[in-house]
Image 1 (spheres, helix red, strand yellow):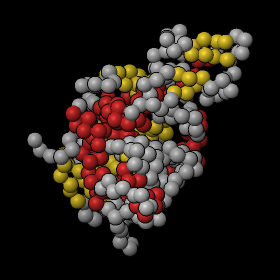
Image 2 (cartoon, helix red, strand yellow; image 1 turned 180 degrees about the horizontal axis):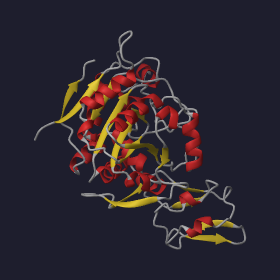
Image 3 (cartoon, helix red, strand yellow; image 1 turned 90 degrees about the horizontal axis):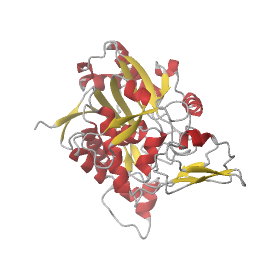
Image 4 (cartoon, helix red, strand yellow; image 1 turned 180 degrees about the vertical axis):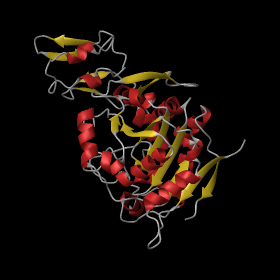
Length: 378
């Protein structure tokens, strides 16, 4: 079998030459994005707009380079992400859009509209069968993402405290899941009511199809009948007061495998293309309301039709890089009790693990871990 091709370009530029956005355009064109028929097609470009307070997310300039290329090829692009499972600044479409705007993403800066994939409250999703799924039979994906004719992922490759790194598969699998979908990936448990936050408004009752939610009339607080709760997460998006939570109790290996299966649901059956930038490699996810110093130097831009090969190429490049001393990784390495794991990501977050994600992705046919790296020169 022919190896997947992953195209690479570093971040070097020359004086009075092309800037990085133009270099990114050249990279994705060299990688073959023009092989896709974009003519009149709706194109979802999935990225992360960054949590408020975090400034390590990809700049709008990167998004615009991809958007402009898609438009040149005749497509109708929109930037998209789905609402978060946890309470924060991106848990519903209104706050999510405000966060994106404050972080610099808008029709002028990005060159296209922004659509929150799972709607106002994170409940506008669609069930998508997972071919060869072992952990997920039907993924809950944001409807707007699945309505698109073509799917493109634009990923900020960085560390992650649970999954080791946040790459293309995480951007697609976790990122495209609705609030229900994210809940399914993170948790095998039941809904839990925070009594101090519950106002007894009963909105959640309309979402529960399993008679799992009951009102304590005396206290005017909702309760969960755990015998009836199936952990579907539909109630999560209905609560405006963050009173419903799911404990993130899925073992990391199970989380990784569910994430891979969700990714497969998103890309199967339609043209897809993937871009990953290894830049500002922060130790933790862009979902944090802050970002620490990068653990590794800026490496470059990668692109491929194969999301798994892309993640493998990015992690391989990172593992070859020299850690930055003034970082969490540097602090850990300097500690007296440091244990060398020969992996920058697990050395940063010792409880994290990423290999099961890539192994499972290959098993279910998401892509190949074998790749040929093609360097694109200026």
